[in-house]
Length: 411
Image (cartoon, rainbow, N blue to C red; front, side, top):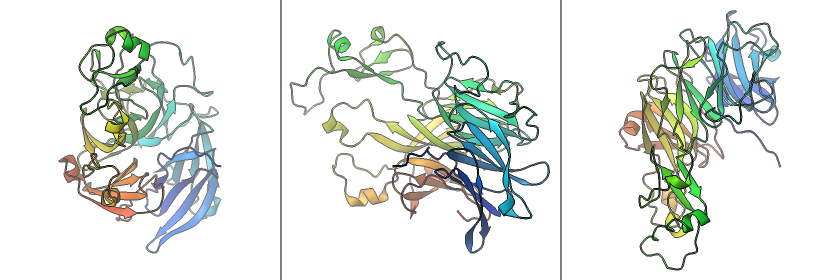
């Protein structure tokens, strides 16, 4: 049995549009393909770090193409320079040492010359005291480097203020605004402000809410899931359980960083977005409007009793963020959750577990990798923002985890 780290940004196209880079996670390599009118041809494979999960491409000051590869297991970033004379001689020219379990990389800043990497708030390469037992210290880090001046130190020299700790659990995806001035960082398991109270506490404080209509009596005493409404912990009938929960849970899902700031910092004013989803996968910025799209699933934890859950455990969604306002859109509104099991026609139309997003160059079309469905969903972005789900689906095999699009139109 082979356990692999999950892909985050497994594909990238060179700035010139002539090369496709793909991470080979189990073999610890970067595959380099030549793009032609006839398709793809494997041109080279470059050994990198352990379990690469993301790659991004840029042009360096010498005019050569670089592929920055994020190595999830070896806590590093491998910088591969593509040899323009002989692609088979492409090699790693620099290795950056970063925090634990790095996941994604983007280039941003006004000159798009800064590299940003998401990492967990720990690791052998993290400088200083991580304050793991200190209240109020986040568990999500963003590292930043000047891609044109990495410094002489072994492992590179991060920009002042890097790593920047965000108040969330482990981060995953990154995205940059079209002008490069803002970097968006998403928390993977951002939660939905819910928690469970133990059976004894529930029993000693009024017991469970009444069962839903149609339920049979005699259910045993159990714990209870309650939701934080911004100030108090409440159950489904509005009772306040705050006296039994000695903490609050913020809902900071996506953070906004000032990509040009030195030291590295969040944007001024409101620097986070709430209400995005429970588990946040990848993000993409619509090139024509600057709106941020976030692939996510949202758990239905508040629904009690298996006969009422009936397989409706979580919803696959795209959340559109304009400014700091999040508007979620369910990708499968056609499902009738009252019919169990669902008919094959519903299954055929469904797109589950959205993990990766890519836009057409004109911003009108959104491509969504449905990891759980073995399909790519193709959406009209205007319709999606209006809450109208009109999509075409392309079957691609099991577990699609990435998608990218060349400027000329091929996907």
